[in-house]
Every structure is written in structure tokens, then in C-alpha cells.
Length: 587
Image (cartoon, rainbow, N blue to C red):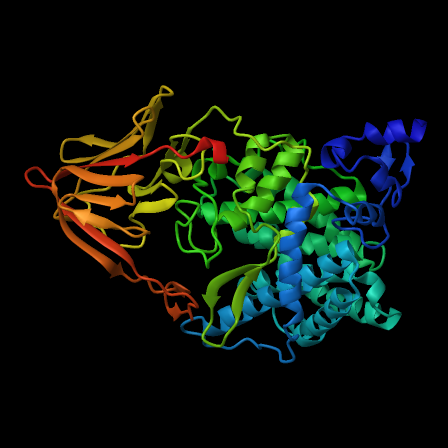
């Protein structure tokens, strides 16, 4: 009993395992003088043998739902064949085709090997374990040539993720490998890891304070997971781990996000910043007992997700603005939800659980529309982490009173009508607007060329609970004013544009004069100015990357309605958007 009480008083332990119970860790850890000794068994990173046994018996609705989705993707993975040929670096690479073949290739291999390994560890199905074994060994043998080149930032962004993927597969499917295969994996990881530590991570630039945003967190966190997987098995691992913890404490956590919680490189990078923080910090706590979550709680800010998640995901390839506004196709709710589940558990925030469950397909591999001309598809495997990180004891509910958000670091502001999915939600990013209503994106400017009179001021926000206003610019000839009337279920936008204002949107629309309608629930009407153009298929975005130089093979290209409007006298346009309130009983 005395040992149990000591264990329960370790900072972060009960917060980390609120429903599984503190006894789970005792199977793989020894408590001595109030500290957890290093957990050296396998699996060790994201679940111990004791936790696996308990999770295999989980019968609650949340775990069951996620598990069903996880198995669907695991069965899909069984239909895939491990890679046999290395994608060597090519120079010159003018449209970045080789860079993205390598990056997407590694991401695809990593997603499949991790997903199969998790499915095996959590479900015990032998075919998942054997497939995971083949994928991990293939990953080692095909990509081992990364130990022969000279590290640089372009390579490290992908290679570090590869090291994490192989390390996770090694940890979860440990009992499927022979002793010789385990040695082969460790030797391969050590060769590549040693090269990158000496020639990349230890350099003044990469170890210094200035390297602290998205690339930094992805690379260092992945390297830290590698170190944790090999701890006490490879002499170098302890040195790598010490360097990673130091980097997290000094740079990545204090400086990785802006003070207001935004990611200065964009909201999608907020999500991946948080993902990789969690990948390392969760494993660090489980393996060593070192808990960074209480100390850096303020820096684990999720206000951007609260501001921008708009509606429930539907089962199609994601498009830009589909259910998270201001975000591209690969940064929608499936990209955010696992992070929100972890933060709900860690910091007891029911609103995070509530929003995460707007993805009914959580648990699956995220298959994006990004496919290179050579067929390499960008995949993300976050679903198994959602299964491990969810806590059914956190009752999902919209208990957050705040409905407006401002991020001065990136000139963004957001207003919500409510916490019901599909209700009015508007965001402004450096003067560009996105509006969601009725489960559709009904107005989106990003992605088009605009002719605005001049750069607008940073947005200000006023909100009395009933009426909220965003203001950008104050002069009669250059202003943007957005007013959300919550009791009236309407949004009014006033802005100056010369000569035309052009935007695109989702959904099936009918037009009658100066009014657009989405069924019986949403309408957009010009109160001042006139609609000068409406083309139901006028906006056909081209999916491209690498500064738009590399056109991708989009598996679901779409055309969207394109709308244009013009001010009649003083170049001012006034739009009013009505949205009937969602059915609260359904949520």
C-alpha cells in the first residue's frame, strides 16, 4: 500500500492515466523513493504490457468506436506491399519532385508500419504482427542508405520521421522479431541516428534557440522518440535523450508557439507542432517518469483549435476549409482530433473531447489528396494515438463560455455563434475572410487573387455575448467590419473592394438576383452592392506543392462555385448571411 501511495503522488501520473488506473504502470516499473525507474521493457513508448492487457479488454463506447475505425485501416494496410527500392536524393531538383517523392514515400511507409504495429500490439492479431515485421524490416533495409549521405534540413524533415516510425514499430512488435532482426534494426537506427546527431542536431543552428518552430519540433521530437526506444540498448541513446529533453525545455516548449497560442507559420503547423510534442512528451513520461506537462501547461494552448473547428467530418477526401476554417485539405478535423483527445485527458477539458468527436472516423489512417506524379501518397497515422489517448471518463460537452478569439501574432480573429457543429463561424486572416454556415464553407477568399485598396490593420474584437464585432481598418475607403448577431442568427460583412470582390464556396447553391441559398437553412444576400457573377463550377483549384511548382495527382479534383460582387457607389459591399440554428438535440 505504501508503494501505491508513493506512485499515486508522482506529478502527472493520475492525470496521465485517469481511467486506466495507476496500477497499470506498476507492471513495468519499479517505484523507489518517489520516482519511477526507467521502463526498459517492450512495448514501452506509448503503452506498457499492463496497459495493453487492459486496453484489449476495453468495452466502453469510445474505445470501441475508435477501434472499429483503426481495424478498417489496418485491414487496408494488409493489402499494401512493403517498398523494395530506395528513393535516392536527386540534384538539381527544380520543381522539388524528388524531395516530395522521398518525403511522401517515407510518410507513407511510416504510417503503414506504425498502424500495423499498433493494431498488432493492441489487438494481438498475428497477421498484423507479421505484416508490421515485414514493413519495419523493409523500412530499415530500403532506407538504410540515409546513413551514407550528408544530412541537411531538406533530408532531416523526412528522415527523422522515418527513424521515429521504425522505432515505434520495433517497440510495439518487438516480440515478432528474431534476435538477429532486432539487432539489425538497432544497428540501422544507430547508424543513421549517430550521423544525424553529429552532423545535424549538434550543429549550432539546429541546437540553438532560433530553431524552435515546426521543423524543429518534428525533427527533435522524432529523434527523441528514437532515443527512448533504444534507451539502455544502444549506448548513444542516453546522450541523444538528454540533448532532446534540454532542447524541449529551453527552446521548443517555451518558444514553439506564439504567446497567444498561434503558430506563426500557420494553423496546420499548430496541429503538427502539438502532435510531435505529444509523441515525445507522452513517451518520455512513460519511459522515464520525466513529466513536462505540468510545467509547460500554458504553452500547450489549444485556443486555435477552439476558434477554428467548424463542423462534423463527412466520409470523403477532405477539401480546403471542409471542417476547420483557414486550413488546407490535410489539416482538417482528422488532423486535430487526436491532439484534442490527449489535451482533454491531460488537462480535464471537456470542450476538447466534444470537438474531437466531431470526427466520426477517428482511428483511421489519414489518406490525403496529396499524391506525387510517381504515386507517392501523403499519409498520416494518428488514429492509434487517439485510441491510446482518449479517456471515456471525460464527458464531452460544450462547457466553454468564450466564443471569440484573437491572435495578434498572426493577425487572425474568429467569431463563433455557438458550439453546435454547422453554426455560423467566421475567421479573418490578414484581411481575408472564411465563413462556415450550415455545415458548408459559404465564403472563402484564400486561394484567389484579391485587389484590396491597401493593407488592413490588425483585427480587433469586441464581444458582449450577444453581438460580436471584428474590425480591420477604420477609414471610409479602407475597412472591413464583421458583425455577428447571435440571437438573430446572422452575420454582416462590410468591406471596401475595388473593382470586384471575388470568393469561392462549397455546396449546391441556387441564385436569385442578389441572393444565394444553400437549401432552406443558409442564405447570403447583398444589402449593398450587387452580385456581378456566379459560376457553379468556376473555381477549379490546382493541387500543387513546392511553392506551387509541383502539380500533384489529385484523386478527387473538384470544381467549386465562384462568386463576384461589386460596390455600386463608394466601393463598399455589405453582405448578410443567415443561418438557421442547428438542431441542438442531435448533439
